Length: 386
Image (tube, rainbow, N blue to C red; front, side, top):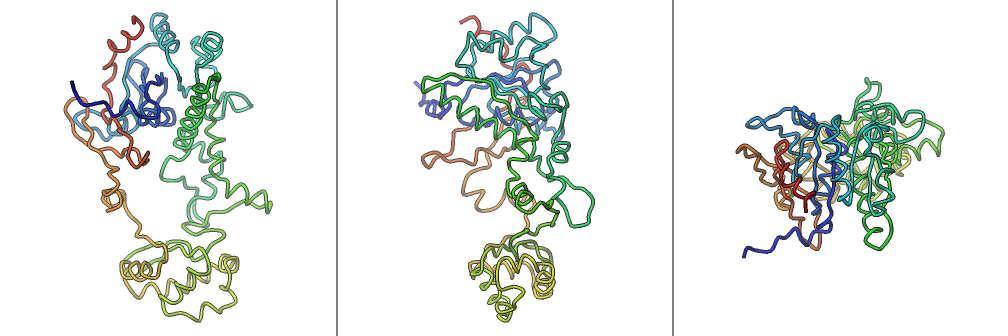
């Protein structure tokens, strides 16, 4: 008799999820549920989730696909064919959760939309992720992360002042939608476990992208003016941005008067404390361009690591600007155990960034191996014969 399976005590242990998703937002939602113990069955079209084609590949297996599909099981179904649609239908009938990120109307045309199952399966939690939501004048339009970043306003506040439009380097529109989806699914499952009913969750990428921009939308509501791009600077705090030192850039964030005074002491410019342009948070923010010029002249006199050490001793939040290789090798990342080994199908070995959460002081026991296309067909079909 082997050791007990630690996943059996995971929050979503025993929850069966059917995922009909491609690329990012939906698969990320499914992976978050899998990380917390859900049994996720990924239904893929012939040829598989298109993310399987994205480089880099290790032994022919996409590392991008692996990063969003660990811990899942795969079955390949051609939903244009009636026998495969019937299999998908039957799998949904035994599922607790469905996640799909197709254009609105696509699941209805397949006969796999929420109303088909609602009366017979009132406990079913059905999550639809789309570009603009299930209704409204844009509901039929498709979208990808970059188009949603553009439509939702994210690109209008990203980049340097006066520069060309820029998107956030991380696909925040995709992953915000996936996070909202996983959050809503978990909340609905809590309702079901309390004896309530499931329901249909509508996750619009445009809406979730606007929702995470609460500071920007509230700035517009309060002033009637559009927020503007500020590079690494902040509209209401200063100094709170990247600065060039002698050998490169670093970031400091003096978000209140106490920290600002510590900066002045550290750089030997105590006179700036009494400067009427900088004697409050609001005035420092209003005059941050001239403040940045003054500080840049000071900071260029020494290397970034020297300023970081001095500021850290003074208690001022500051940081080097890491590449991803540096962030993944940082001592905090290592101590937290966030980077996990990942065995790829076909014998490849790589790594993945696991769940950053801890529950009762322990990280969730994440299953890191992603599936080959259609790898779990027999195991999945056996569920329908049970």
